[in-house]
Length: 468
Ligand code: ARG
Image (cartoon, rainbow, N blue to C red; front, side, top):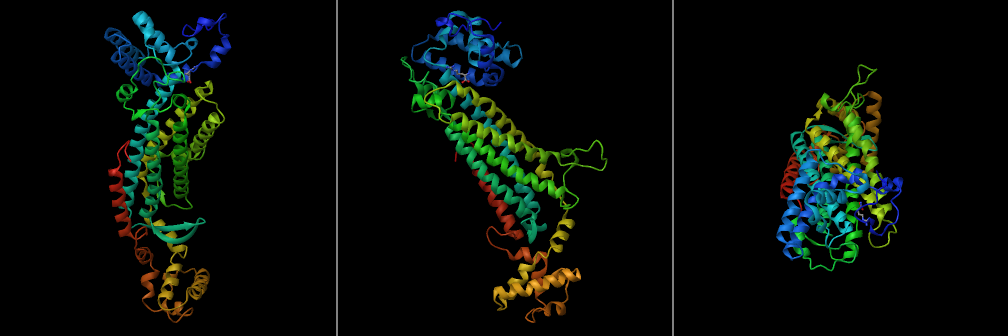
């Protein structure tokens, strides 16, 4: 079957394409995913050609009706994709000609598959970015509400994964939310450069027909036509930008995943994840595994891989279009699917996180997390910080020996280390006192967390897709 010479370009060929070469060079098995955008682009192109007098209105109508019917065939799964026809563009054009005859062959006037495919991917990416943005917003909203709800919940904060100082759980979740706010900006910024129209660049140099690229751009919702035809057909920066956005986002999600995995372990025992986000073990009946965060953590690798693949794909490519660029699609498609699914998983899961408050507080207490507060207390009473540090060090050593937290020692016990210490020390040694004292913008005090959640909510509702 693949022995036939391709009807779209076979004119100058004297022997049919080798069967293996036809399969090797074909992209229709994966680029059929661009069918909707390909038809959308073709309808706009035909509309513009009629407006400038290259097609008659009847020809335009026949083409548009035919394309709409083809869209229906594809949606109903009736379309017969043919590998010898190489790619999505030629499959659809051939079907159009089957349906409406010679007029179908006029659709390609003033255009090339080079500007056509670049346009299709940009339309596709714009659609996908908008879907991804909805999930990203939903996740950010879920985090903000969880943080607000848990503004008073105390947990240990860590450095080096060692208990450092008490923080509020809400503050920790808002740290995640900050990461996502930067990802959100990167996504919207990427969208600006996606939304530029290559169509009209034709193969590489433009076309001799009196096309009006502003008309086509407006019909397709592009911000503007691409400035330079050579760049327009060859530029894939937007694909690299999207996968770098995706890589940074997945790096963030992998960090959150790691914490969720730790927190659900019996050793930490900080949170519970509802059963619907976990699975069991086929051999160990007691197991409840945090598969969703583990899998998100694991999927980070393939997204980094796609970024590397696209950077390397574009490296050293001479202008203008090269067949190499057909290799842009599979990494992009997989990056889009992975990002969307990981965000959906997180957006569903985050609001369902149940903190085990008693266990978190206990962990904060066990780790001498208010030691810095005692040092600060001594400094406020006139002790130099370095001396205060040493005094508290001795208190902690005593606490380790006697298995007592600083707040569990009597005033007499504390006075062994400094007689400056008075009854009022217990206000700063409690976990509640410690977090409440960090009462400035960006601090962990519950009222600051609630104010930060409100600012995050406002910032999020001020963002508009495609704006920024
Ligand atoms: N399938 C091709 C791609 O994805 C379409 C453009 C082919 N252009 C060409 N001159 N062979 O890049």
